[in-house]
Image (cartoon, rainbow, N blue to C red; front, top):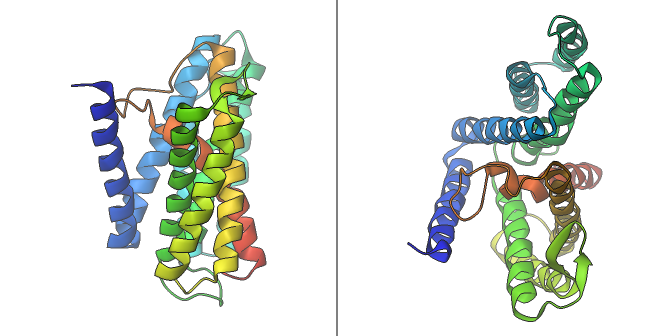
Length: 275
């Protein structure tokens, strides 16, 4: 089977699983997205091992799961904001646990453990608020914002890839990501704008102006997210975060742009009182 065919099949199945989990309801969303978060966090900690750093993998994943769950149940109104106070001693315990690990690089281990939570777990936790209600502005489970957000992110990736491969000549960040070009960047922006216009007709609950702004934020931040992950991998000397998706790499490779775009989209939606 060719690499292109593997990439197409695995990518299609991945999209179906994500969209299906969102459409089926909040429990399927919880199951799939906490799994994606844990896979991504594990892959991040795993690539850290190549730099001879030993983050607290299992404990970091446990705290990551608790961060996601706390935000999920807060978003649906099952618990109050007091739950976040419980995360403070858990984060501090990372420092205490390192005292008993007898590792050569304790500061690096603590730093990378916390970085994984900030870089992976927190953005995934904020995705909860894009699809779940937690304020008086929106009632119940509404999937259109999150589906639209992912459609815009995928449109940006696809447009940038197609244009970059076909006519890309001027490198964007040659030292970090040699395959990315300015032509691909512009192509991704135009594709995202087109998809934002289409989405505004499918989901008229959100105005076309807001969809364009969400698309712009997603396109810009996705590029930075992709470049940051490339910087991480290049500095450590690995090509992909994993082999979960044939032809695509790991889960973290597929969510690198989302990890940067989701928090900023959340801030925009909150400011516009759309969530």
